[in-house]
Length: 238
Image 1 (cartoon, rainbow, N blue to C red):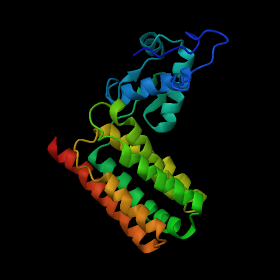
Image 2: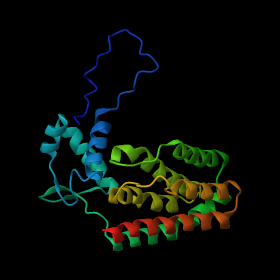
Image 3: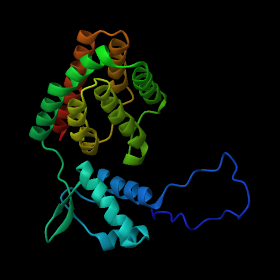
Image 4: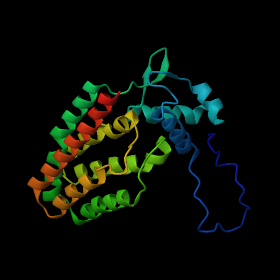
């Protein structure tokens, strides 16, 4: 879908915008989300070349916001830039790649949850609980990336918030840099109405709120191990 140019405005000068009017997304963010959706939904195939000029024509924008979007997607780990050949969409994780990703997460995140239970301040506890409540309020994600984008974003913010609440900056930075959520969601969208992710998050939050470091670590490890099993099960179905 062509990205919207915020300069194309129907507003009349001097009129007051009604509170219900939608807030328009900056062009750079809109282009980023459009290209990200194309990568996540495999409209841009894994490993395929990503042409700046072609994308600019498709999205009806100049090449500048496309370049900016690709730089952000490179930081996300969704595209790679190679000398002489430009950008390409990253390959999907292999079974071994998924196992290695979760191996790293299991080293980092249970410890982060335990430390969060010990050190999180009240505002951080409120933020973690609020993210859980937001996830609980979303409809079951299914279908293309657009339908589960909010769920994926909240999922990542939840894990990042727990790590930040550990008050260990290097640990939080390591968790954030894994960019694990985009890679996992890119394998396939959530498929069942009884997906247990939110319930597993709830057990983590409950332990952190009760300041039970051992239970928080156990709940996080259980969540990650179960998530790994679900991901590996998708490889078995192929």
